[in-house]
Image 1: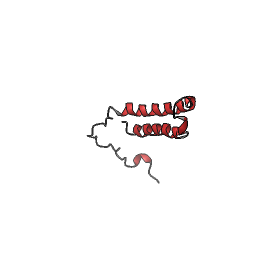
Image 2: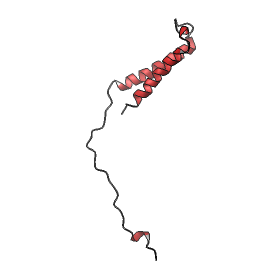
Image 3: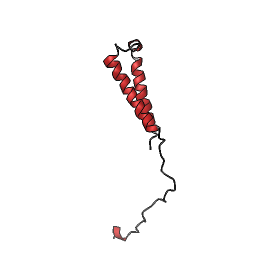
Image 4: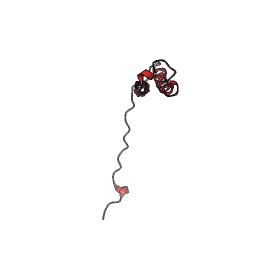
Length: 84
């Protein structure tokens, strides 16, 4: 006759040893810089679409304005990966 589950040996639950490392802290400049790049990227794209004809030299750059705006947003996303 097969053994019931209650008759089998029970294994102890694994508990990892306590870590002695201090929690990581982000530098103070990280969040303002990240938010600044994000805001500037969004603002650059918005100004290009809304008032690009009135801003000197902005119409001359054509789609490079999108590259500039999205670069600011991408830098903000990269900085956000370093935030603890």
